[in-house]
Length: 123
Length: 123
Length: 123
Length: 123
Picture 1 (spheres, rainbow over the protein chains, first blue to last red):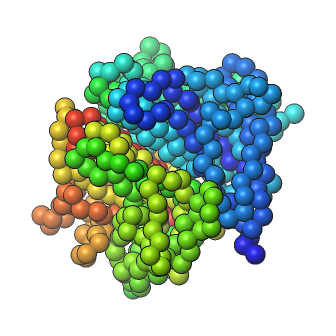
Picture 2: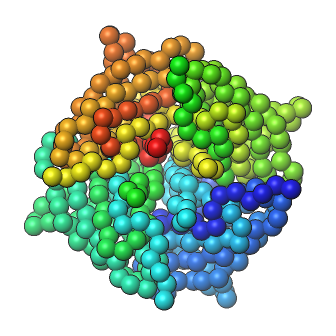
Picture 3: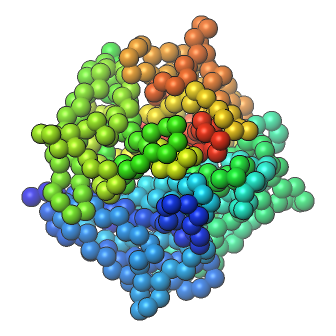
């Protein structure tokens, strides 16, 4: 049995889905999760905005001993997904400890740009 | 009621507003803040330079349960704003715990470049 | 004698070897390790995937008072290496404390893109 | 009087000075330091390599209440500076607590690429 490692609560303040893609790659963001344990991890995501109420209770499962690179454009709740071109922030809660990294590929122009941060763990 | 989470004191040593933009995007930096609490957060920013005294007491409000992606070019105090093309550093103090990330889009050339860090929390 | 510093357990959730290179540079990732001590560090890496079992027990040695920037494309175990174009995650265990950073150069298009994070230390 | 804040010991495992520049910007790296205190900070840098002994005791002063964005290409000891195109790592020791971030601009190709990390603090 492999124990869970990391933290149960992670924050990414700078979320943004670039509205356009010009090159051979598509602009996208990923919330990259590693579940080191032998148990499934159940994630509950909240999306915060500048000028409207959060989208709450987006559920994602990460299988045991697996990583999951979650495209933020695939997240939705009750038919509402994250709008493109709008600043937002991400809160990840998990029932067991995990590790979270966030990366963005911006292909707004012909050549792509990349950024990445490890999420901020709330302890 | 949602409690405040994070830290009250954050540092970003590498600030820099690129002086020019060549592509379809404009060079800019953002200080991205998430306020998880049900209360407003009042931020007090200080801007440090290499060769002159800091600009102090720049005030920013982040509403409850909201994110704010603050363009550094919009910050000013007594008519003084951050000059472009000059290395500087940012200190963020908040009256309640928040989470801070810093991102820069450099569009000096036709294709953009991105970088991002979670701020360093002083505990 | 220089003591070991850092942590023995590091996580990088977002691994990805870009499948193509278009410019004068080759797409690659590096796991950058610093061993501050006067003793050799023995690393044991595990590679996690989204849809298959991990590759375990990849061994790497970092000499005393040296850095090692490990190209992930050079890692293999029993003839199995990390496939390109597939999301994965990296776990680094070391017998003595070290410090780990991860960087990716994406040269999929003519102009390169860079990202980097300090690994997440499990304490 | 402003107290010193941060840590006295910082590590950046992934250092690299790109050997060439093709665009209007020059490839470079910066070690960005913020000294929050009313006292001068005296830094002692060590540069680690993959295949040779470290360069030790490079001294840098950061004035009180100032930031300093140190170009790594300007660092030298006894006439020896950091060679371009070689993987290395950086250790920063300071006599008082400071905060350290590392950023790289790679202008190897016509369009620039950026990466940045907050250094890893040894506590």
